[in-house]
Length: 266
Image (cartoon, rainbow, N blue to C red; front, side, top):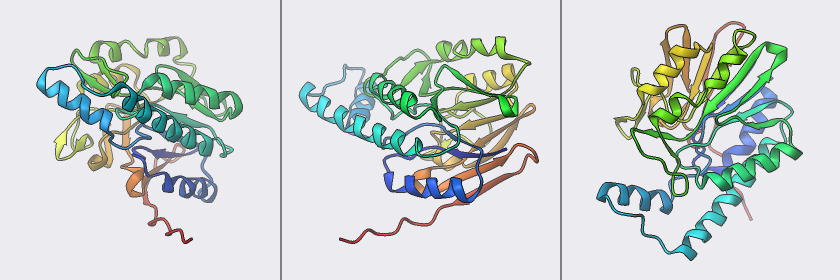
């Protein structure tokens, strides 16, 4: 099977029609998306400022709801387009994809009418034709912080136990994992010149030994690393046109680049 790996759309909705064309052209069997439908927004900036200052987040509630309404529109647009594909689409939310409540609402609504799209954050989806089970955990990871309205952040202990259900699915299926946070290994976790990976992802990969782990949240870390028998793939930012295609039969990984979207004329 050929898996198209994507991450970090970050608000660049003009890329989505290109993805639809790519799936058809490259005979893709499944699509994985490792988080960040949204770009960096004022809610995240307010959260990061408050976190740095050790103060509560300060934002006008009415304005906050306006920003959240805009986020819903972006979530809906993404899932609408992914629902047009005739292959499985497996997604997890990224650090920027908050509020989680509205993300889950949008994704689950679309799962009903577009059954090819599965949100597998803290969940799983077997693809029985290939004896694979896809599972994932979204959001960023912190030592002891949890946030899901302004940004999506989980404490490391919660992530560590978040995939325990996989034990009952092995060894019947070969696992494939999707994370919105990369492991700490090599340069696959680079973002803004900093290593943002977390060791808990390394631990999960070592525990469940997936054939592949697809990761997002670190656009500068595009590439692959190996952790044990697992090939970890960071496809780069879809915002910049980056993607990766993995052939599960041959093990080959091809990194590709979409052209700049055509300018629309009036």
